[in-house]
Image 1 (tube, rainbow, N blue to C red):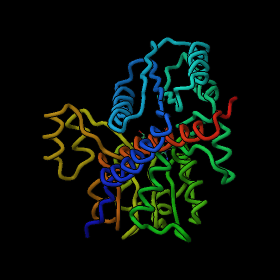
Image 2 (cartoon, helix red, strand yellow):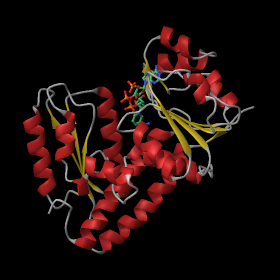
Image 3 (cartoon, rainbow, N blue to C red):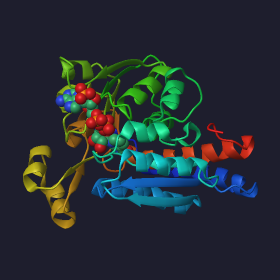
Image 4 (cartoon, helix red, strand yellow):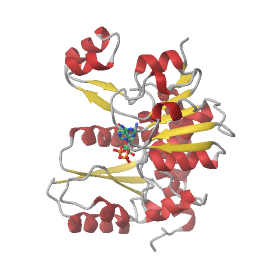
Length: 312
Ligand code: NAP
């Protein structure tokens, strides 16, 4: 059996086309949505993520600013920058790329962001809104996962959903969104016993772990929908051979590009056992960027129509 690929590219393109239409309406009203992306230090993965986000802004006609600060920046310096951005009217969304270096307290920095400009949805006010089912900014990756499920017509009502990973940014919010869509949700983590057996009960299995190919065939019920959130970079032939059963293609990619991306789910097992799945690359990651655009435009629309942000 070979499962249906839920293509992030097509779904992200459809969402971006919808966003582009909303941007055109806002521009007619004299509003250009603006995003500030803050990068601290030189984490190569963060650089790629920010580049993709800024590129999506320019494709869609959003105003964007990339602000780079040195790795040794203090919490106070970052909070001061966030406060400046909170006050600027042309900035609707503020994105502080994680992880921050150890010199900065990520929670303090993220909590300084005006909740109305919190396009990553990490502020406790937005986390509380999500928990209680109120409107607010929903974190981009979890929101993107829901878009993939809905647009692929995967039913959630009454489904058994298992989320492996309990981070504030992915695992917990996606579990909450699935719960609001009437799934019966189990959240697993590093201390969970009988993990494979629990995962095997899932109609919808979400893997947000950060370990290459951790989820194998014994975790996947035949025909389940599998959402692979993980983005892991393999950089040596040994790592590639340890992950892929048929490593020749990936080894060629490694030789050509210097690294190979793999998710948290063993890709060949996922393809064989899942009824539908998101590939890595080309799956959830593309939706994260698309949903950032959605959130930024939403923030701009709110500013245009209410004339104020939550902080004012
Ligand atoms: P994280 O904050 O490191 O959280 C990882 C979670 O996995 C933790 O809850 C951890 O459990 C759990 N875990 C670790 N080892 C485990 C094990 N052996 N068994 C069961 N659970 C285990 O990571 P994250 O930020 O949620 O990201 C997860 C993955 O998604 C990463 O690969 C990341 O790069 C990727 N990601 C992708 C996107 C995208 O756009 N596609 C966006 C964000 C993240 P404990 O809580 O017990 O430690």
